Image 1 (tube, rainbow, N blue to C red):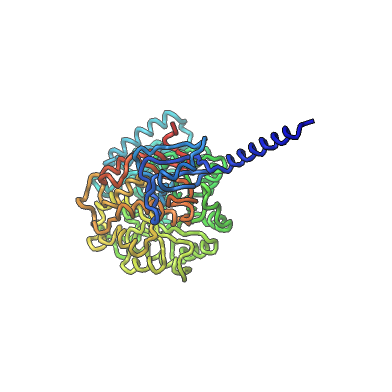
Image 2: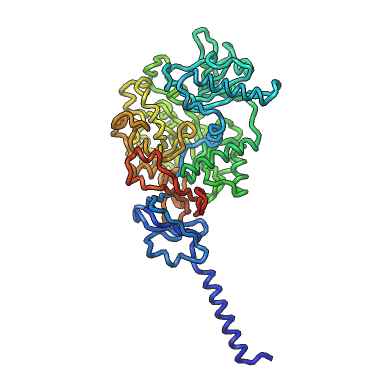
Length: 563
């Protein structure tokens, strides 16, 4: 029989152990602590802090070093920023993940300075493929990134500038809406002078009406319909390459444009398996009406804290200005018989906007020319009466009519633009548009004064997905060589604060996620981008080579691996 004193002692010890156990369980020890650098929160009430503590993927503390002690526990990992700069996780609001992955594995033609250089790259790949596959296999030579505006001859190339065969060749221009093919491809696709232009697209022809091998906008579909589709494993590989590359560049999230049903399914599977390194906001492709109806019928998929969400649909309105397919109110200055192309008619646009509104989906209208922007705003006006609850966007918005700056404000439409694209386009904008219209192009300052709910992106792989390159372009309006001196129309520059907000707090708003992302403060997702040095302490030229120290998602560093 246990003595009463012994029993009391045992009860006392048990009570003490229980108290210690529950105290340990309730101890708010953080999983990670980040300190030792400048932490820019983008929170106007607390612009900078000295330290951040993270628990279960959320920020639990942001403040002075002196307030860290309660958050230090036996299992807390501490990360010294070593004098670097931490920001809310950078988000690129316009990326095409699968195309980006493809650009990382296929021949890169962005460095080609002439048609001859492209010919040589294609010929080399053709020889390699012929050695790897049998003659009976349907194999295409593919590449992307060519840009005739950077060549001595600024005009479109022709199928005669590529090897005629034996393999078909398919090369996407840097804008990803213009294709260049060889004679074998034309033959396989059955395209000749009798082939009509599809709605929303154009086959470039010579003076006798024969196809030259250049296909614009929806005419590209005439070619892609004959190219063998990749299997799921191959497409997942491209997505993985793209996502890893984005993380290496410091991105914690992207808006993925043009996602078809297979890409959406693969991203869903990767999320369930814990394989998505960064967060993805998918914008579904509008080209397949059946798919659009299916996803709109399902409603918004995913919550704000998920790694993959489907809340938006893309609406193609026109094409790029570099290929003269952007829809203009007046003809091109260097092509007076051409006003560009609308990819959809106004009735079709209004129908899609109406369907999206019923499903509470965001519409992201691809608009480059002023006629394209007007058409998109007209379609939005059919449903917007009091505010813009579904946060409709204008992607690119490179050229607006004077009156449409005011409509941006009245309708609260979000302009999302890609600053880095100006660094190549400024060379030919006056040629395309003439001096007066060119002065209204890339008018970022005027747009954000009309509606400061703007956001920034890259349209990778059209341009580099490195957000620091976009920030450099936004702040300087110069290319990487420092041209033009002082910046192109410098009155339209953004400040460094504004450019960083465009990739953080404003980007979060553009995806309905300002409650959980975009700033560093208690209760928000612990997504951060850390640079080795502070861009506020560096000349803009050095931003271009600024190394990423950590890309952090849900509190865990992705890059580099923790030591």
